Amino acid sequence: MADYSNAGATIQENVSLKSFNTFGINVYSRYFVEVDSEPALLSALRFADDNMLPKLFLGGGSNILFTQDFSGIVIKLDLKGASEEIINEEEVLITAKAGENWHQFVTYCLERDYGGLENLSLIPGNVGTSPMQNIGAYGVEIKDTFYSCKALNLETRETEIFTAERCAFGYRESFFKKEGKGKYVILEVTFRLSTKNHHIKTTYGAIKTELEAAGVEVPTIQQVSKAVINIRQSKLPDPQVTGNAGSFFKNPVISTKHYESLAKEFPAMPSYPAQDGVKVPAGWLIEQCGWKGKQIGHVASHPLQALVIINATGEATGKEVYDFSEKIIESVNATFGITLEREVNIM
Image (cartoon, rainbow, N blue to C red; front, side):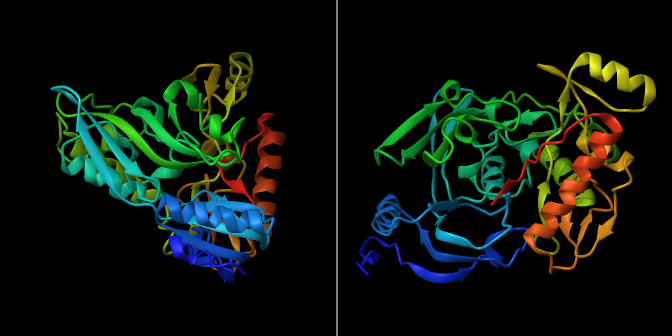
C-alpha cells in the first residue's frame, strides 16, 4: 500500500463508526481517515481513487442513519478555524471551516454580538453540512444569512465558490442534495451577519412564550439563543445520552386544497404558510397517529417530541430504525394522505 500519511491522511482499516454517528449505530467502514487540511483531503481522495473505493464524507454524523457496513472509505472532515471581515458599520462576513461544530460556531458569533444565527442554536452537526440541507429552526434557515461557501469539485479536484443563488436553497434542500449530490465536498462556509440593529425573530414556535416566562420584553440575540436552547433541551434528547439524529422527518408542505379538506376533519391541525402551499408539522401528524412515546424493540419515538426517533436501548441496528420510520410513514399516509419524507440520510 502506498504511503498517504505524508499529507496527514492516516488510513485506518475496519473501523467502527459507532462513535461517529449520533444514532450510535455500530457499523464498520472498510477504511477510515480523518482529515484536517485540504492537502490531507486530497491525499485521502488519491487513496480512494487508487483503490477504486466508494467515498463517504462525514461531518458530525448527526444527519445520517447507517443500515449496513460501508465497503469504501469514510473521510471525516476535521478542518477547523474561523475568520471574519467587517464589510460595513452594521455587517460582518464570518467564515468557518467545515469541521467546526455548529453550535460552538453559533456561540462564537453570539460572544461577538453577531446576529442572525441565534435561532439555530443547539442544532447538532458541523458547519460544513449546514448548507447541504439548508438547516433551519424557529423561523430561520441558513439561506437567510448565507453568503457563500467553498467546495471541492470531486471530479476536477479544483475548489469552487458557491453563492446563495448557485446553492438553490429550498426547504431542507440545496444544490448539494440534488444535482450536486456526491460531486462536491464543502470546505468552508461564509455567513453575512449583523453587528448591530439585529433583526430579532421570536414569533415562531414557543420562543415568545419562553421569553415572556423569563420576564424578557425586548430580547437580545443572546436571550433569544438561550430561549431556543431551553426549548430544545426541554423536548429533545441529548444524542450523547440517547442516540438520535434530531428531527427524523421534514415538515410536509401540502396543497391548500388538501389542507382545507383535512382541516374540516382535523380542525385542531396546526399549519404555517409556505411558498408552495401549507406546511403542516410532521410531529403533530405522527402524534395523532399514536406514535409519540411508542417503542418497538430497541427503537422508539421520543415521548416529548414525536418527530424524533431514538435508539432507546442503545442496541438498535440501523435497519430497525429504518423499519420503525417506515411504519410511521405508512401510518401517517393512511390517516392523512400525506407522505412524510425523511430528513435523515440513509446509508
